[in-house]
Image (cartoon, rainbow, N blue to C red; front, side):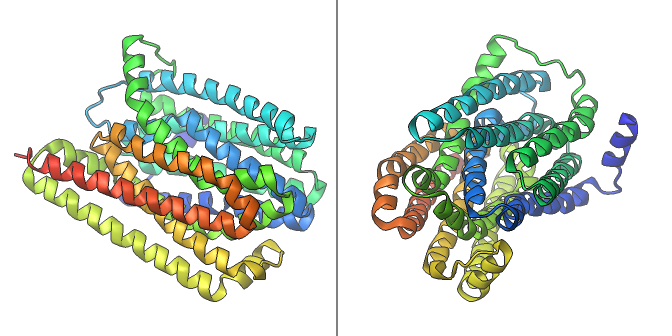
Length: 429
């Protein structure tokens, strides 16, 4: 059976074309997973549970980046294989273990300081474990992409998203029990990961036994640390308004904020997945260290910036016109009072897409230590002003905070990238 699954996943006449197709499908599924579950949950369980699930998903997404340690981009762009797959696997085993402890620590903090009840504690912990599956299998997907088979990786990931959504929604409809639905979703996700990602991992990476090779593990942890901190802070910055709402306002307001936040989240996620297939291409152009290849890389970067601008403009057009009635219909809740906040958040979503792209390119050209300063400044600003903004201005404060912080971050990363490329251009043969 396992061999049959591998054969089905690897079947294609054109791996590159298949990678773009399945990457697009995977991007769409990743973008709609949380909205689809919330759409069902508001109708079956109400606004309170929708608010609980929203903050659970936000916390789990933050913890997932702790598990991934920012090494997916580094691994997939490691075309010269400076580190072996077993060494990447070893580091991922360690970081995912830390992720479990951190998730538990956050839930305990929420119980002691934010007065979480047992149900909210368990739901957040289970959703964190759901993202643990994604963080762990990501090391296998990185290996597949490194070997030119991103299509296989995205097929594995797409199957997991579909099964998670179907399982969670069906359990919500028939049991109306959020805790039971999340538990069933986790069980299905683990089973799917073993049959696809881990099964394929042996084929692409050889031995599944992680390697803890002392010096190499230390080197990889050092190389990945700036990327991890940058991505971790990136998610924290994006979710800072949600954490402030969780601490200062109600579960119902949390649900409303997440409803209008979803279109911006989708814009950022789609933009990210559009450039995900070309990370390895960027890396090969960079390591070639030739003038014509360098010029080609710069053109690709410029082209991607235009694509992100187009996606953002389309998102804003939708927000101005049919955004509010569409969101109200999808989630079964009246959000007509939040049109201004929706437009503001959409601007922030576009800036997030630019920030993520610039950070990816900075990682490829190995300037991750410099970009860490940009994320530290933005995260410190978000930490200091998020609660005061939300307490004083409510939902509007959360939206403005998100847009301003994302814009500042994108501008700082762009300047860093521009200076870095300009310096390196002088060294090109």
